[in-house]
Image (cartoon, rainbow, N blue to C red):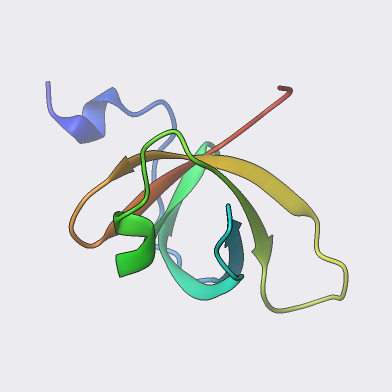
Length: 90
C-alpha cells in the first residue's frame, strides 16, 4: 500500500503564507506546499532538522487580523521540510 492511499485526509496542493512558532525558535514566515484537514507540509531547512514530535504553533500569515493559532506537532521530516499534524482536543 502506497503512502497516498494510507492517508486519512486527501492533500491539496495549496501554497499559503503561514507563521510557524517552534520551541525556542523565532517565528518563521513560510509557505505551505500542501494542506489537508489533518495538517500541512512546509518546505524549510529549519523544520527539516527539528525532532519528530516537537510541538509548534501555526497561524495564517495573510488576511484578517488576529488569525487563530493552531497547535500542531511535527509528524515527519525529510530533507525538504516537515509534515505538521494538527493537535485536536489535547
